[in-house]
Length: 409
Image 1 (cartoon, helix red, strand yellow):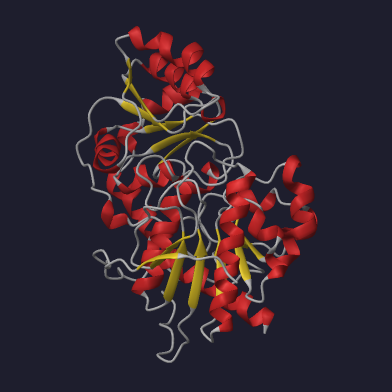
Image 2: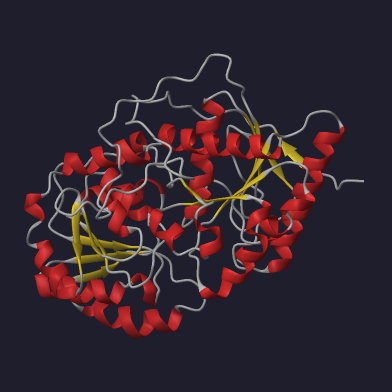
């Protein structure tokens, strides 16, 4: 017998009407989103005419969305995956699809919310016990729905590894979005289990780092952003901003050096998570006595939006293959340009000289701060609307879902 499930039938939040049509998406190999043009500076096909609207009798789908079990949706603070899940559920429901969200307790969505665990686990992220328990109970519920004649068409997985490894245990096709990087430690896992589901990368950079045997079968759909939720800032202050998880790969210490060389004030925002306390104490905290560096803690909601729109730019001195980098897109939606090291998906999101600058080191970052007057803040917002707004990304995932359903049939 399937375990009991707490079902929360919550009233819909205010739903946004679909915005004006975004530039057309074209199929390119296994990609449902445009491949990058040579040079990796913008999506191919951005100037194309919008696609024809779907036929009126196009089948609506019943979708099970598996969020991680650690943090509620939407996240009360830091939670990139949870924000992606929130927006996808919003967009799918607004499009008339029937969506069930399996998420941590205290989650809210216009989708039907099922919580299968008794508590969230924010301090135990990536503990296999809770992920396996969450996925197994969700799979039991998906099986139960099929037994009573109300099956799901597709399962969209945003958890770590458990659901993908066990995807062939379901009769329902599964789509797995990879939110972290492909790296040597997980390559063997994906080679062994990747064929069990349809894998989606969130950037071309991430797809390119996949194991060679899987690469051509991986589809690319970037993370969404609801542009109309982010206020535009036409008149920023004189300071620049660094925001994110305070960790060596994210580079707050490099941002401090670049801002000092440029002679501008730097605001630092973000959580210090378990394991990063020593780095914060060594590389960030000693500089807070300086007049030009301020730590404002973890910021969410309206406070985070205010930080973005009041900054002259955000600094992204990353030294790893960032799979996406949601903070870059959020900042641009507020009109704030991004100055980033040319690593990972930054080379796709930042259009050099148009919505920010790509640089190689702290010296070049400091020089780019002096060139911010060249950037049109309205163009920063426009690039996000053209490439990442929710309706466009939801359309991309619907194509993936239908590919998965068709392949299983």
